[in-house]
Image (cartoon, rainbow, N blue to C red; front, side, top):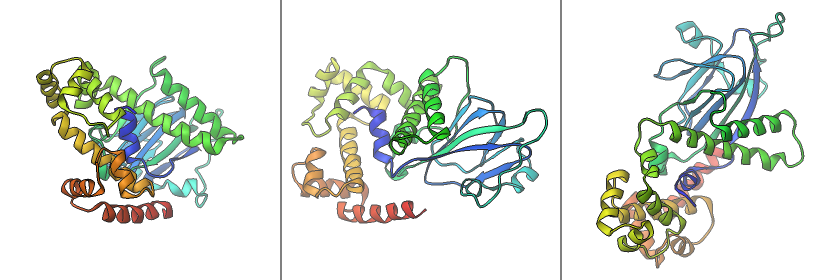
Length: 316
């Protein structure tokens, strides 16, 4: 595993969802804040995204938007004003069929028609990796010719699956949505002008150390062994890792082991002894002690609470 894959896996809950939306004329839909991440991809036409507490964003064909922290927003045919926000209807009333979608214009070959891929990922932000936590509330990835070819390919494949449900779609769709999330985060990292983690993963020494820790978090790591993996001295690794990541290598390893333990407790029925072995603790008691010190609760209490949250997610 690598840092980005692990960061996503640690917070992902359940299956992602998506809809293909086709509207025209005067329209406006509201998406309330939610515990997850959302996205919109404009396949055709132009529209506006109006994030809560932020400035309106103009979207054109080929643009992708990721809202990694579930920020509430309005998406509409025109920029924000009081009247636009007032007339917004819940987006779910379009997708569940309880509200007719706005009529398409009948002249000029549907010149104002807009087609979008819209969806969301269920995420447990309570244990978010700092890479995901530092993502801005809105990531706008404008369409620029040949830019982000992997993202464009994923969008094309996803659009094709939604156009026509074919054999294997129940596996293909969630897999493509997961791929889409990875490519949107990669695209942000490639263009980011702020934030620590693009710099962290761009530094060869720190990136090598993180790859080693994430590939086998249960290994008996020491700073000396990790420095050897990165090909530098112990002081060099400790200095660069701490400066970029914000905590020393062994402190990061402890935090990541416990974060992985939380994900295993949430997502698997494995007994505590098995979870402890997976994340590098010799006994369930040792894991329980460290877990309570880090998160203020026992592994058993955490698992029970996570099961209750999961039931709520399924019900919603």
